[in-house]
Image (spheres, rainbow over the protein chains, first blue to last red):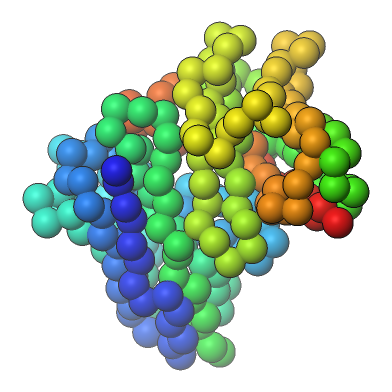
Amino acid sequence: KQEVTQIPAALSVPEGENLVLNCSFTDSAIYNLQWFRQDPGKGLTSLLLIQSSQREQTSGRLNASLDKSSGRSTLYIAASQPGDSATYLCAVPEGGSEKLVFGKGTKLTVNP
Amino acid sequence: EPEVTQTPSHQVTQMGQEVILRCVPISNHLYFYWYRQILGQKVEFLVSFYNNEISEKSEIFDDQFSVERPDGSNFTLKIRSTKLEDSAMYFCATGTGVVRGGNTIYFGEGSWLTVV
């Protein structure tokens, strides 16, 4: 059974700082990994999807890396802004199923 | 940008009552999902739906739950007899292809269900 863990649970940084969020998963036989953003009381917005054959994916100030063999992914946010404040979730499909397994998320606060 | 729309945004219901949560998928999407998030907990998979039938369901999705696409547009989640532990945010999600195939799924804003 796939388990996804995210550390830290919460992170507070000053504006402009570069930061890294971590995600680990127990079953390395994944098809892909997605990073989502969740604002308080809102739905999930997909940020980046990395296929199992990829090592990195970039979108603007966001860069996600994937190391399947070690069961880890990182989300790098460059030059953080107060608008980046949200909870960041990672998720992987479980086995060959349609079920996404989510981590509990990292709550990011970027202080002006 | 196309959106997944969910109604109601918030519903309070008495224990034992039936609840129907509604979702309007993005128009060309064929894969539909329900997830839920109990306050402070992880987002959990409930069910996936494709070609007018359930393709997968979790152990949470017991006989009290059902899904259907009654009119070819709306996608609904019905909880027949609500329990206190059903209180959660319920998310509808839709996509053009299977998630294991690398297809992104798009989430709605959620329906917050409070059972009292």
